[in-house]
Image (tube, rainbow, N blue to C red; front, side):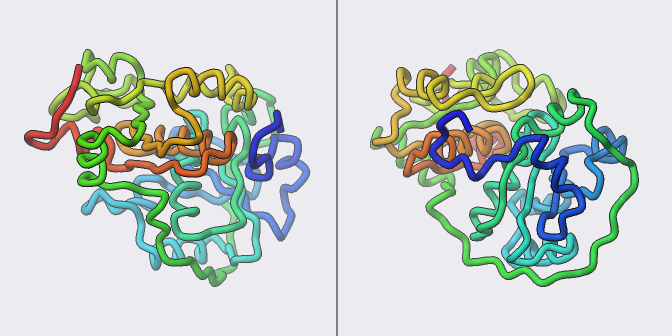
Length: 281
């Protein structure tokens, strides 16, 4: 696909349509709010991952544990042999987050539907409100791959040494601190506005076309490289809660093949709410 470094991590709508009912494939919709998406109609046979309940701990504000992911995938009838196809709302924000979490725990057979729910609906492809029933399965995840994730202290050290490239994928008004929350979620905001010192603002949306599909590899390189986001550097992506930064993480690591890309999933929700973390506006 469009000369991507790893085209095997993407499937298109025609492929998914042709594999509905394939016992070796499990299609999963990942939503922040299933009532406004999955429950109104989804790809036939698709299971649901509720982003807020299934792959996040709402109390700890952390991602699901290895054992929790194994239980989730088992409940969805997914064994290690089955191919997982992820898609979702908001141009695959939350599906990309799930992809990142799955890779964090060593899930090998997982891909994204290019264009996500938006593309599927726009093409007037079949949907259903019927919820599928899956026979329980056993899934074995691996130990967490910490090379894909960074934490607060790591980011503090990165800005102190200036040896990493931080990419803030939020919108320009969030980056400057003009607004404290993204327009899609106006009630979910941090106490302070602005961005991590030295971060480059390259909004996630610049990586996709109008229909939600990813731009070509050449277009993506033209977007990132002039701003110093190059494959010879270590890249740290962040946003507000880690979902949009997962989208950019996916673009850089899998579509462009950058070898060292990490997601700071604590993102601005953590950084912008802490006392004495440095910010720029």
